[in-house]
Length: 204
Length: 248
Image (cartoon, rainbow over all chains, first blue to last red; front, side, top):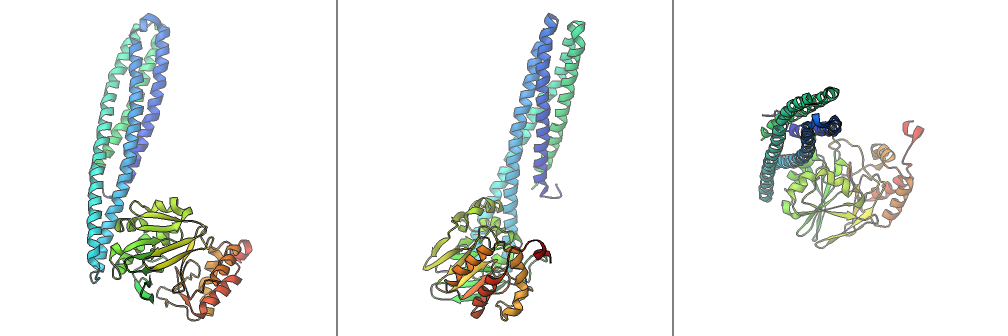
């Protein structure tokens, strides 16, 4: 259980910030793919197996950028829902306090529909919050599994680099290393975000 | 929070709420006002979040919650209307009357169920059941978009920060000795009010209204001869102090 129930605002913001970093790194990956494609073209027939891999690197970069953008949007909506829920929670607390303090009021019953309405809204917001978390988890899991394939991609890039002329081998190996480093870095942010989402699910 | 009846007639009642003994420390004491008509109620400058619980407790001793169909915020300050997000949960379909220039700011307090009636700079009127109230422009006193509420039937002017004083928590409701009250309000008016021109214009307009009671948001109410005394004093007061005048 998260100690401070208000911390979910912070958690949602941290996820958004992590994904923003992942997006920036993915853009770097996209540049790497473009450079690799040009290099593979110059390396000629010996690097022909490398060219399809550059398409995959591009696809991975695009996927990370678009997925991060969707996740950012969900995180932002989640933060808004959390804020509305917090307001409803707080209103319920105040109404409960007023019920006690105004127990001698002839109009105390007029608070009942207000209380019921706010409880209904609180429930709706809780459901919306849970649905958004599920969506966020799904997006992060999809992205994480795509990134798992990136390790294979780096290995395949190294194998294909061996087929190229000596002149280009080092450069193509650098591309493979770059793919490995960049995807590792993105993976770190995704893993951290997945852990943070787990914290969000523990907020009642 | 104490409740004081300022006027009780066939068509409507004016109530004043304030002097809250449960008020948290370091929070300025505020006066809230409510006009209760046949089927509706207008709650004016309902206050900050910290006062919401006390305020609602006090209000539902007077009227059922669903009778509060109108809110008024003289300007955008937190002690005036930061409780809006909570009233928004309590009052479905009510209308908030407030200066047009503050709409996009006040909505930051949270407003999804209440409607916003943007009062134009020149002011306007609000008729609730058999009662017509006037929104009197009081711009730059102190807020750059600011209104008072005047009831010509009773002569009551809800003056917001005009006439406000820094007083003790359990201060009397009315100003008794005007001269001794001056030190409690002088600095507030000199420091908070930025424009002598706006002040003179307001005094000139208010003198024509046949005001019988000036009801500020902080401190005591002026009635009888103290209304004229206040207008004379305020007219002569140099406000918007700067530089040496401010510090010296």
